[in-house]
Length: 254
Image 1 (cartoon, rainbow, N blue to C red):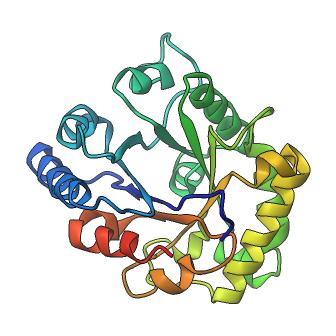
Image 2: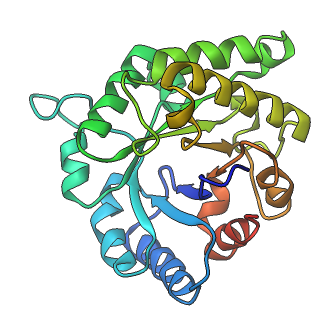
């Protein structure tokens, strides 16, 4: 991993947790982080919309960043059930996940839609965690690199910068399945992402963009994955719902 990039371990809680659950998990993480004065990583948690305010209160003073899982590209308007980036910034969010495969698949979000959401996040002074990744069929068909290049080109706004952009590579077939690509496969995709970012943003800006791996990262495999060049952290799903597992992943950062 290159020197300018501090590892980011971000937890995506998805549609999990009531107030008591979220408060307890956030408080546990907060206590762990407050006692870690020499942390070499950054932590962020992205709870459901209903828990953002309460989790933000529980994380106060802990150096753990608050995030959200999605937003609408418009700042306001007649969009019943949606939440804008401005509203999330108002709650104290630093990150917003956009383009997660579950949004792309279940809500038929296109690269264009993801790009618009990412731009809205950036415009509010937050960082967009832009998710990309291939299906099992695409992987088996040898199309992984083409899919990743296309999604990256279509989903990252112009201009973007290291301060407001995080890329998360999540092979769809590995999310929540317990399967992961080989370290060589992860290395190949992350190297491609770095090269594409360099071409799009310029070397000086691209070198600072954090590229996370997601897709069944857990305490057992985190060390091997996080040791790879151009793997600058993880976007963690199921393992982020347990403070001990999430913390163990963060402790694997090198």
